[in-house]
Image 1 (cartoon, helix red, strand yellow):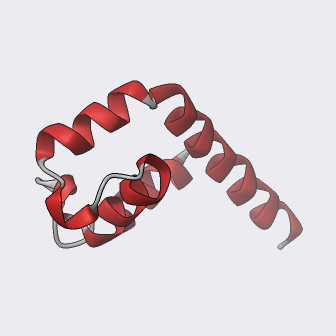
Image 2 (image 1 turned 30 degrees about the horizontal axis):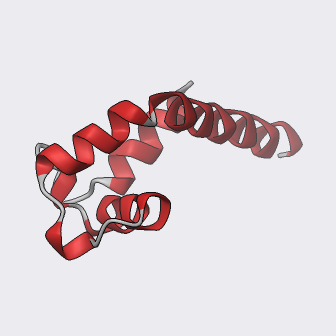
Length: 74
């Protein structure tokens, strides 16, 4: 279950206490929501994560399964 935590840690590198400033997270929100990354605020990012929470949790679950498969084959 460390893979999702490791992903979040890496995705917010340099902005761990303010993940909405992370270029990667802004790009992801822009990709999925259509909002412009350069105009995103903390409220926009957190609101997007809240409204898309089930998809986000599903994505983190997929990361966990993928990591488990990778380590099973090694």
